[in-house]
Image (cartoon, rainbow, N blue to C red; front, side, top):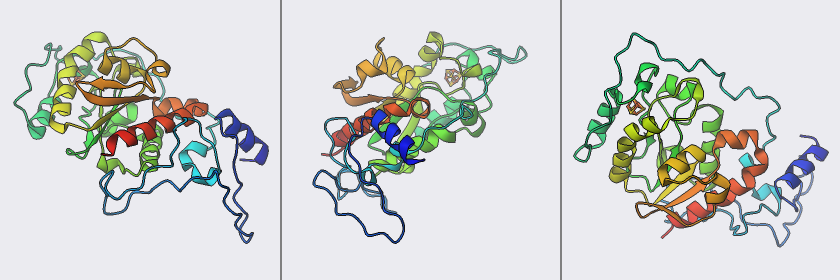
Length: 291
Ligand code: SF4
């Protein structure tokens, strides 16, 4: 990124002060008093949050400021110049020759992880089973303290059977790394386990039919904190009609579990000026994770 664009981009994110990295061979400048400590990186051994892991750069204001070397790289990445990360939309139709949906999912309260995964894999609870390639159960540590909840599988997720892959997934990984967590140290799930055709919003009856799976996942996981990414996830999990911008920063709970609402990584790819707010939300989630 050339210097003028870099400055415009940082200003758009609310970054008012920064120190430029020296060219190779140039002397390192002295850190200014306002610069923060580097953001922690997860160790190969996978440290427990709050146990020997230094906190992310303290930033209570929610506005990125200070030397750019101290900000996570994902926050400073140049916004994409094309929309090529947005999956092509497809006709929202179901194949006619598959079995119909069978209705709401029944009681799951006795199921463990393996049985639950199996039940999801064979689910025909709503019409989405007709058009899916794979169910997307969720991925990560079944004992994780942080649960990330997104909306529904997209095209890549449907193909691979895993949530948050592709560019949005890479950004989520980078965001988690900025608070010292690897992807395999959290659990990642979606409101829906099957992809809505054409990447349309989930329908109310689909959410209603699929909700018991997520509820059981949360019961089994008993996370310390939920990070809800995006409007669809936040509104459905928290039974709210509010926009993400109005939910973020509030003390919210899902069944007494502290829940932090932030923007979806796919939205951040399109609207990088919101990354500073997402960074503040991540740090808020981190603080709730620590004892
Ligand atoms: S979206 Fe949920 S309820 Fe619908 S078929 Fe898939 S797993 Fe079943």
